[in-house]
Length: 103
Image (tube, rainbow, N blue to C red; front, side, top):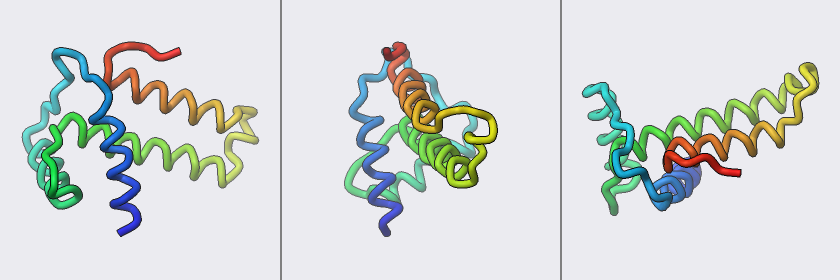
């Protein structure tokens, strides 16, 4: 499905970022199992670590949240530029993956 193709782009981007020597593990065993099962279904040609899958899923929900709120006009009401917020969210995701802040 189209959403799977879009998600794979996000997962590829996250997986390609250099992770810190000790990435933050997914600490919930059930969530780890769920993420692994989803990763196998979503991308059977490769194996991604649960931390990559988690960050990919969080990225998807967070970016869509910003877009949804922008469509609803929420950011106009509070006086925040949605494009700048979206850009900051992408930088935050990169920092979460790499452990290094972006400029």
